[in-house]
Length: 424
Image (cartoon, rainbow, N blue to C red; front, top):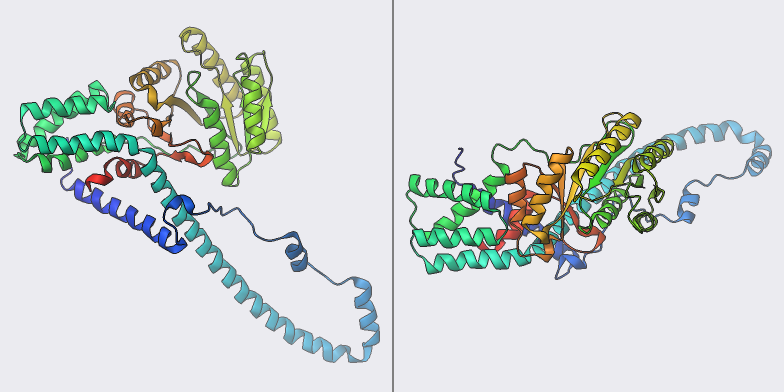
């Protein structure tokens, strides 16, 4: 196993930079919290219709003809003057273009900085329960035991399990920790806290070839198939993803593949309306047929992102497996190499039951990523590490609140910051 010597110091530097970004944005906008900074989008435009018309204004041809007839004798002089004016205008236009390019680049840079600060603040707030529960107890453990001992290990093990890191993950973690304590001759529990953070970070990144990025289609619609049991927040996650991609300038469509659950189609249609997304769905009919027709429409409409809802009746695994197999074949026939992502939605508050769902769905279909919802509502944020260790599927998005903007792309550095900022 690779030992990441000094990793804790590197993490401290990373987290320090994140603190600086937050403080700089607060100072720049003269606010006490990042929540007070109005969200901006690179796709927003402040130009009014009148301003656009003014820019495009051209005098009518009749007036021009009259002026030319009246000043016919001065045509040659005017042409020479016009040539000089055009040269000046061209130079001015070039300068204006350069200024506009610089302004746009500065705007995009500022937007990215604000977005980064908002993401950091969301992780901070969303992981507050886990941080207070886990980190405070870990710190107290270092006070209770000044030297590493079997009793210390026992309480640490219990602490990790209670944080939903997962029994198997904890056992493997404790073995690695004991080896490292022995090899590095660690006795001080305060220093051991740094080693613990090291090792928890390694769980997620060591020998990792998994990608937390969404696989986008090189051409045509990107198809994202959403799976998960009922009640985990699958429909609202689809809405939040639609909101995210719409704000990125994408054309989005939702397809209701959960056709037999009462109210599911209407619910998704309502979210499509709220997020200004296209929608296709029919109640009480074959899901594969609905998805096929929806994809035909998506191609006709030149849609960028297709979000497909599916049934979540995990209690009948055989039927669900057959249905998802059929759905995948239909999608692949309509759009080559699709679905480009199959995201499993898990409710973080269900703890180890969520891990069991991940294991079960992995047996049924090819899961490419996890969306972990309601992480802000639990003190057991260690489930992120358990998912990675036990099912080897990357977490691609996490839900850290009820707002549309609280669904965040998973960032391991922001996650570590949210968990351990009080220790740094």
